Length: 291
Image (cartoon, rainbow, N blue to C red; front, side, top):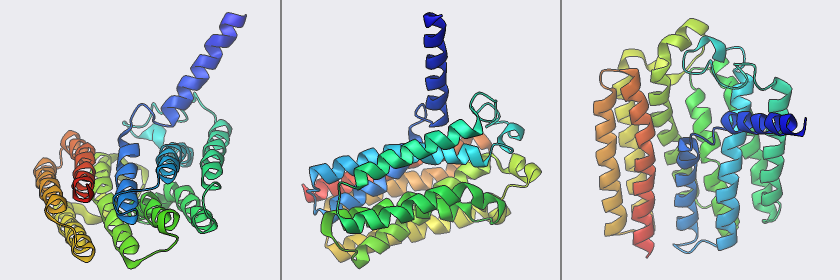
């Protein structure tokens, strides 16, 4: 009997592990890079170590919470989509009630970390939780759920400036807009993978909204995003290292255009995953610039 109980516990933990997508860390990385951009800029290359710890931990926890509430919201949709039908809730291996409990535990743990920071950052954190909670439901009401995702993923940017400097300068909001644009770019690539299934089940996305102009619009958004990053560099007086990071990141953005031009799902997913390198190169540019 004890052996069976241990097996049951291991299985539950494994299902929770899959539900929180810890086996697929790409979402953590895409959320982490803008957070690190903001912390390094706000801290002028020397972010407070404890603030850095809280934000990195918060990224991991809130990304996991976002995955859980997303699967809860999509529990009636995922069984009808080839890529998602084996997710724990869709497959009946985790109950919706379990998922809500796990979501609450993750959010409360993240909030407990935020409570060790200043009151301004604590107040801002409520906006982050609200965005993370409503995002999964947006695909039912608007073709722009990717924008809401960007707002949720990017909320760590103003929070980082608040925690590091106690203020929200204009550069924080410029970086926030850049982060939203980037999320719309990579999540549209992601949505292109599921476009046919989404059309059948009635789910909305920018990939459906953009239609045959998807590649062109993604390209235009990439140009605006990099223009915003150039403006960040100009306003901060950054130098060679930062701009070299942007050049290399732009090279990957061009490659992503090549990958998606035939709209083949596997290539679109490859482009989505490769956006991790874009975020990393921008951060490396900042890191070496401040060094």
